[in-house]
Amino acid sequence: KVNLPKCTTVGEKAFSYCTALSNVNLPECTNVGSYAFYNCEKLKQFNALKVTTIKNNVFMGCKSLLNVEVPECTDVGMSAFEDCTALSTVNITKCIKLEAWAFESCKSLESIELPECTNVGSAAFRGCTSLKKIELPKCITLGNTVFQSCKSLSVITLPECVEIYSYTFQYCSALETVDIPECTKVDNNAFERCNNLKNVNLPECVEVDKQS
Image 1 (cartoon, one colour):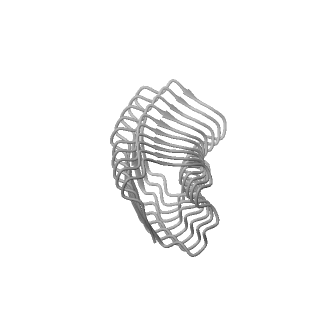
Image 2 (cartoon, rainbow, N blue to C red):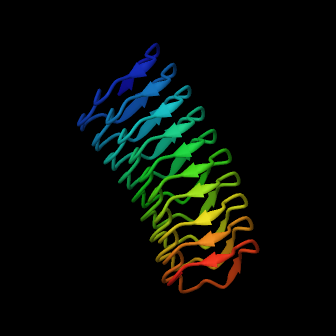
């Protein structure tokens, strides 16, 4: 267990490969550097209520991580939680930007709320096979393959999103309803193999690319 009640910054690779570490409490920390907890295989809980930025690959490979509380975080870096296969609860409600691969292959994540997020990078939730619900009311931009192989996702509503990029929902086999009222373009293969898709609302769409 790590308890650092006065620590404000955790540097790059600070606890990387600390394979016995199970719990981290950083009540005053505002910045966590790249790879800080990389491959801490037994880390289960991370609390840092004042953290505003999580850099690239911070928790990548933390396969036991269950819960993350970072309510003040506004920016989540590339692959920050990639391959955190046990992760089920995340509190990042002030997040504005999710970089590419941020939650890729988080296979236990069932729901996430991102009420302030405007930008979601490529493959951010790719392979999140248990993801059933996601809230992105302010999201304007989704990168390609964002929800690729999210096989439990049945409904998606993106009221502000203006374009759906390539392979965004590819292999979302449970997806039934899509509501993206401001979208003007759907790129190639965006909904490929969405075998249960029944309802699509794209009233402003003027271009649908090949094999969409």
